[in-house]
Image (cartoon, rainbow, N blue to C red):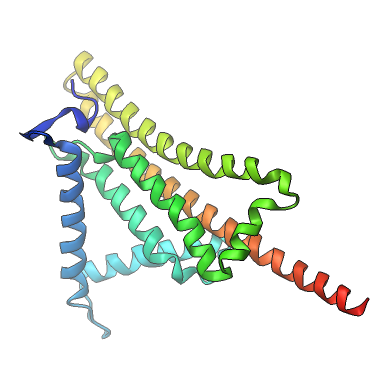
Length: 238
């Protein structure tokens, strides 16, 4: 049984090999790009709208509301990034109902790439909002002794994001394979339903955690700025 899509080699051109992880990743991206183009090319502002437009508006509104509930300021600036993460992970997992398909999120390389994207997005959004100096100062607050601990925390949460998503998707594949080998008629249907639910939940958790990290960094810097202003005011009065 092939647990990881990395093990399924579709084509081999030494020294390069095309495995299922790469192929299915591009397949998911193609489906999302073509689907979004088809829907957005026929958007309507009138009373009569297509079902696909309604579905798109529901998804975008739900993601925007979730970002607002987390408490992020200027939530719309994070919507494209968080929405892309959620839709890619959810689509990758939900397509597992297709025979012969293996979700690319079952590969540690894919989940690590997604986590690295979050690792880059956190300082990128923060620097764009507060500047490079304001972001770097968060690593030495409340004391410069916290610098190594803050760096370790930055790396560890990235590793946790990757391993959490990979472990949940891979474990679902393993359990499904074991159950199918024991009872190949009734349990596969139940496991497919459970797998779809788990895949959707994992996409939601990953996107929410990414937004929490970004909002937390922005909020920390935003809170630090008034404190610096108050300190500068006290110095001027003295």
